[in-house]
Length: 233
Image: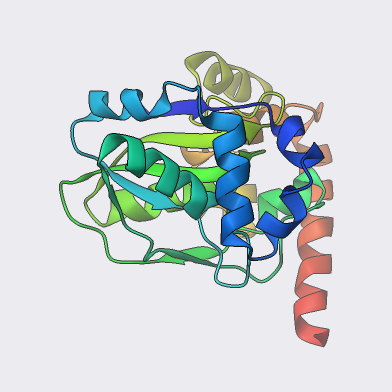
């Protein structure tokens, strides 16, 4: 089980005059924006239901976005839980404004020491397809930690829940041959070909394709273009 808690309407954040400053390194603007949108949300009290989790902001090594750490400060200040801001996403490109297939491919990898047996709550400003927070979840699981929830300031349509529902898993199995879909994912380095690790939103995107050949064509074309950019850059 992995809970997803969305604390406000994302469109309100983007309309705020504080938004651009918060996304470009202004910690004060980020905290004031979080406070204006989330002050009345019961999120801090919800943390108590997980025992004594560690809050982890989703931070990219190349980004100046201060909203995830501002959300952690807000939650920790009202709950007393600990923050660990030592995890970093190392990605080749920003996911901002990317098409769905590009978001699917632009994974990156997380670094950061995991405390075995401890519960973790992952905190990000927005969740879209869930790929980034899922990579952090898997990184923490691989290190022996227990990711229990994700807290977000806003979300896109159909972005939660993060993990595949039973219904979504069944639809994927009915539409596509599991072995062939696994091979396609493995070919482009997605989840080692493990279809069960796809997020619910990623499954929803894949189900837009009528056949596996259609999906493979779009996926492999985007993957080839990405590799070409990496070679020439």
